[in-house]
Image 1 (cartoon, rainbow, N blue to C red):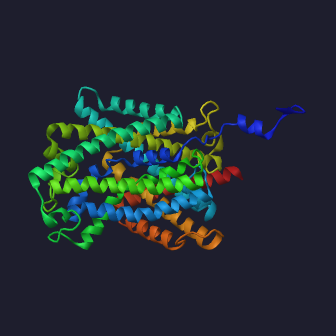
Image 2 (cartoon, rainbow, N blue to C red):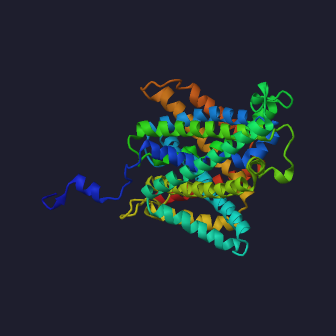
Image 3 (tube, rainbow, N blue to C red):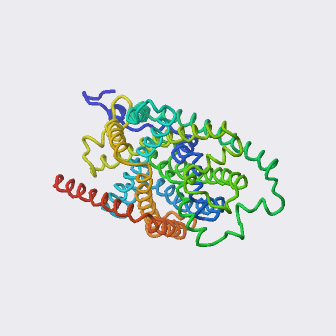
Length: 446
């Protein structure tokens, strides 16, 4: 429609690329489950079991309750600022632009590292299956797959997520079936033996339990990625909160059931030997289901890491878009959308390039050590933002406006302080680099 040769505001908005509100609540939950992975506790099972003297079920459940505080803070802030920037936007607008930038930059490290370590793990696993194909070829192949799927847009990613969730859920169900059969026909626990995974008096120690809980929190890392979808979901004020909380609860209960069966099948009173710690869950699969289940779990973890890497790259591109749109990064590159697909194409391609380079420079272990640094800075920042907004600024009354974010901040701060010292040092160097970029952007605007 033209009036005097000029387009109306509606026509101009329709022609301008923008994120489409096409995602429903179930899309958010699937996205969250895939980026966290239904198989999340399998890779850390041996480490947590050795640290906590068994009691893996208890650590997973305690970690779920702890992370729910932060999940609620994310959901509440998404109601106030339904934009793609997530924690960066919440802290930047509620507290200070510099604080928001530090949180966004720290979270960016988390999002960039996730696809890198997923590509590293997937490439190494495939090289074991087909040793004639060089590692570098697998790296390039997986980076192309991750980037290509994200370039096709959000609806394609949602369909892929649904297929991945279905496949992993079937495999988890198969493991549980084999596990319960093994427990009832071979182990045959009686009476209080069914409760040993929750509490074993012969190995219980509060210090070891909470140390194990600080590691078990890794089961939930990634749930915050849901908030990066705020501009693409229907009714974000309701669905982002529900999607974040439901994802944490779903992953927590499923993970608790998985490790409960594993611990009954292979009691944790005797620590796993060093050579078996990282693959402890696979050896439990070998015990309860033979070679078939061992190979199936291997394949499933490969698919799970692919899903996590794709979803993390998806979130990183949108975080960069949120920062670029607000001039925290150069807008001309980071703050634009493709006119044909309405996705931040430049950012998807850039994250693909970073993943390709990082997969040749980082080991899986080093990347995993660094990943928590940025995540927990973002978590602490969002809890503070939720506290300030709902306790001191907003006329809207919410349940436990101060208690929930304070508890969330304290839990995340405790975990952050107990990170590996080398990871803390490298993370602080990353923040230093971010501050240099921040000052350069301010000088450029002046």
